Image (cartoon, rainbow, N blue to C red; front, side):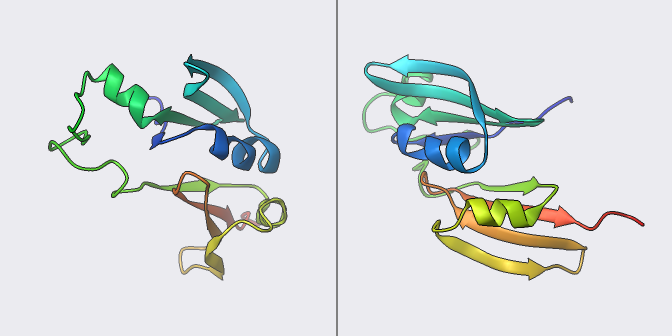
Length: 138
């Protein structure tokens, strides 16, 4: 295995973009239009990559008919019930926290027993994103 990239399924991609691009410095490396909106996008910042795809686009790709629901492993479920939580290690948590002022905080700043200083928010698509800074070894 070489890499893992989450694909977050949302109704609309556009409301999610400012969170990643304007606040966190990600760039769009790929975008696929679906009519007058985006159907798919890849966002990158350094070695971190995140993909968004609309539920409509996923349904089209998987040839799911109206009324069917998605589940990658066991069959039909609603893709909006089981949200993924992203855990992103960062160099400077203070910079991330400052850039996310005004975003809904779900995990207030905390120090963990495993040595991480963490902070978590909900991005506009509904996914929980936890940022972690680990102390540098002396």
